[in-house]
Amino acid sequence: MSALVGSLVVFALLRLLGGDVAYILLGKEATQDQVIALRIELGLDRIWFVQYFDWIGGFFSANLGTSFSGSYEIFDQIGQRLVPTLLLAFGSLFVSMVLALFLGTYAALNADNTKGIATDIVSQIGTAIPAFWAGLILVVVFSVSLGWFPAGGYVPIQENFLGSLRSIFLPIVALSLGITSVTTRFVRSAMLDVLNEDYIRTAMARGQTRNRAVFVHGLRNAAIPVVTVGALQLGNLLAGTIVIESVFVIPGLGQLLLSAVNGREVIVVQSVVLVILLIILVMNFLLDIAYGLLDPRILDKRNGA
Image (cartoon, rainbow, N blue to C red; front, top):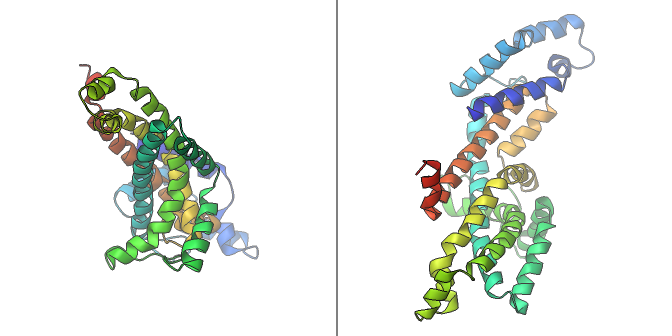
């Protein structure tokens, strides 16, 4: 239901932007008759709800036709571009959560010394660095200077697994930086509360060290903020993916979306935006599952138990 509502909103907003696609495609020298003929050919003369149901029906039946320029099949092109974007999105989310959990816990355990303060300072700096700027710095250091990773491009994972990982490593790091920094601060705060819990003191009274008690008994509770912030950051993550794909020349949905906007390919734009919306919904669903795994009481409350 959320996807359908989102698709309607996207469709309506694009129509409110105005502009005649037929006129843009034909150029300034086109006559009025040529513009009208092209609008009829593209189906732009039909009433809006007929256009909407024709588009949404084609989307879910895997038949969106060709682009206005006629250069590619829209649904096939989206399918080809989807894999790199998913690798970047899910890879960045996973890396961010793991790093934030470790760094936040480390900062909390060392809150009273220079190690914890240094971790806090680094996380503060990380929140202020835009993903595209981080990407450029990573290219200069690890591609141009050291030559460890390619500066751009994408190797399909089915062709060369290790080559594919190398091609998306720097983009994932650039995307993960900001989210990791934000989430680390939440984990640190949650872990400081966990350190004062009775079960931590009980575990330590039974002979466990402070660090072992935290990692064995407190880490699951501290992981809940990671999931919470991860859910809130999904929109920023997908938006950052669009920018990072341009920086690293990765043929994902972001590059397709930008080229479609420049070419006024309305069907392509609204289809890509809908795919991004579906990705966010799927990722939110997976995060809900993670909530239940971390704390089964959450599912019990939702089920009315």
